[in-house]
Length: 424
Image (cartoon, rainbow, N blue to C red; front, side):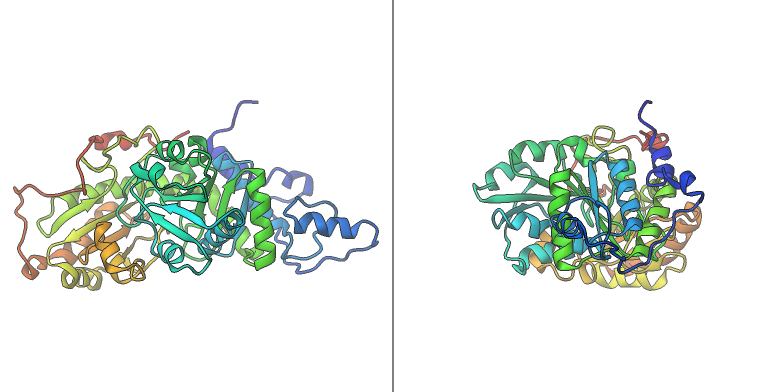
């Protein structure tokens, strides 16, 4: 049988045994412990699980194995083209597990800014004994040392939507494993493992769940790394609750539809924000100049569902917009069916040193929008109302003036190409 399409895998992966069980919806196993029955061989079963191996005969204890969570893991692995996936209680728990697993071979990590503020803080804080070298994506090879155990990148980047050429980073990293945070892209738009990355991380709380009501993290990778990650998960207890596993698995079925529809709305809003007199800069990979290396269509199958924009007048004006919106929810997180707007400098990236924020292009006037499934016209009307009077906080930008859309120029993506992007 030929490889199934993305939509088919999203609906059916992890559900292959349901007909044999005589059920239509996957069962939820809430057991915290399992009767062991005969003691013959149970010790070997425990050892296999504790070493990160697959289930043999008995799950023994929920921290070691949960069948509902495994269904979600198998489904996500199928979407990413991975051998296996390992789920955790949050995206940060997943990242922590990767760093601890890598830490067994050394302590030096190479990373590229910007990344999610929590990721930046964890790497820079030294909490896990990691020594990090921050570098530009084009200079990874210069930053790698003999004791480097991991390269960490996020693309599209949070919150500037900057794109990084994954294959190029992998080539520069050589034998060093590359971790790609692909939360913004989802498996619908990007598959880092196919480009040579060793691990792909998702904050499952975002698009994979899709409804703002479940928290989790997941790493898709090969069998060797998966065993290491399960060992860390068992030892540290960063497990995903089975109810969360069920909800994340359910969310995958509609993921392709949700991402493509939200992407359509994001393109609509980005074009209008880019020409608004109260907006000095707009970041969105689908706008002219925002895909300098031509990665849309080559690495990504579409520009995605998030955008950022800078309002004239800085932090005060940004606060005004946050207070005035009615349809968009002023809140952190992303990837929900409803649209969210937040101020990175004071929320998601507040923990990042100010000089590093500014060097990464995260200004006091930047706002990030996660576009949901509402009517794009309604969302634009909401943003227009919120932007009224913003020019009074500082010098305006005329309609006919040249405006900066992205940090650097580059290839132009024709907006009409969005139709059909994202299919595999």
